[in-house]
Length: 288
Image (tube, rainbow, N blue to C red; front, side, top):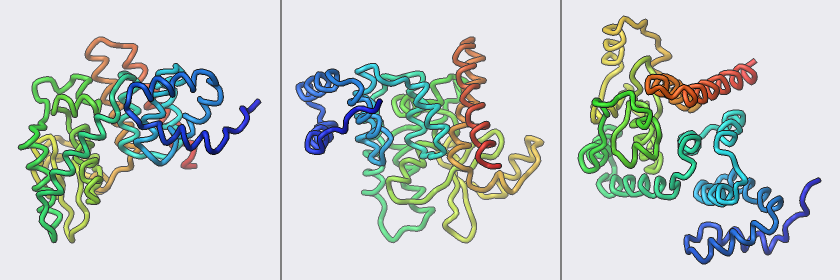
């Protein structure tokens, strides 16, 4: 049986207060939602699936506090939805291991990095000039770098930990790069050649690639091909083209399968293997 619809005025009032960080407001809202767990769950889950990302994360915070959500199941629902957005997916993935992460702090940090980049970009600027500004802010001012010392540390794959520690592996550093560029309205793409993830720019006549693990070095298609040849990996044109967000998130899960297994955490290795299976089966089901 579905809960009765919420009075529109009350609903609007609750949504207005949802992102208020004041402890007194949060305590009052938690008390209100707790009195009608079923109706509150329906409202909060609706907001959590909505287009307003910041409001969605506040809704998830209340769902977590009220014990009305399961981060692992929430990520599975996201996988099955086929509605993939990089920032949402990366944070939902992180919540499967760290359900308590401060989503607002992650978004705020990315906003501040992008804001600094915006201050330094003198328009009109070419795509390469914009990349050089992002490189300066990310890798020089903020000190983001590849974690060469502990490459296989699972924490390198979680967006909030990369933002906290300023180090990661190619795919997670490229995710940060892409999310900053997205905030600038600068269209860059994930590119997933075997073994070393990069960011691609396809705005000029000749594409170029940003190697976030190497401090933002700009590389040509020929550079990437030579790297693959040196690794004795067959060169495929598809490996130099934009990769779907599905593949970015699935590849992060594949990395975690290996890294948790190497760390001796078989339970989490199996968990992320199940996410990989979910991505693959969902894709197979809907691509036929």
